[in-house]
Length: 295
Image (cartoon, rainbow, N blue to C red):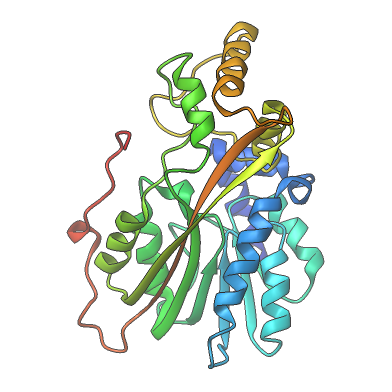
């Protein structure tokens, strides 16, 4: 059985609140679904890929389960499976609780509260980009908890994501206003280095028409994704003059004929399997870590 202790969920949630990313998603939980339209489209494409699996897994975990929509789809797809939703934001777990059925745990994906080799399938939608600087730790934990022959299916964002926002801010200052995103090949290399086999990577890029720059920023903030990690992030309050210059630069470069603007998302899809034998297993010290500098 998968360990289930409600107090672990509560205590872990309080501890993780020191992370600004977690706090941002905590604050966004009530409105997340209103703004997460691109995440919903990515989720649908991930579910489509899972539809090709012939075996019915016994234990399935959703890392970064958010408000529970992927869990709901997984429950429909595999009604006999034991589903586990894990998220670092306690408020997201509370939202996902309304789905009913799955076990929900608030914990850090870098330290999964499960025993070794107990999960048949791990899925994750739009979580891994938050671990660009410590992705090996997350994937090593996934590897540890998967049964031999277990599968990993996840999505993450690539470096072209929000490229318009990045370019417009570059006209204003030298700070990072958009998080770093690893490219598909780098992500694939990390997956292989952890010890996974039969790794399949592909990408999907979409450019959306938005009514205004304000709406682009509102959507990013609305899903709790407005926090920038790293030492080169902006400090202090955003002055109105800088924001005005940013909007002007954005509109000058990416204006549409109808007066709206464009914004791009690059999505990376990955699937991989833990080998039946242990020959591919390696330690974290053998994995090439991502650089903390800009791409």
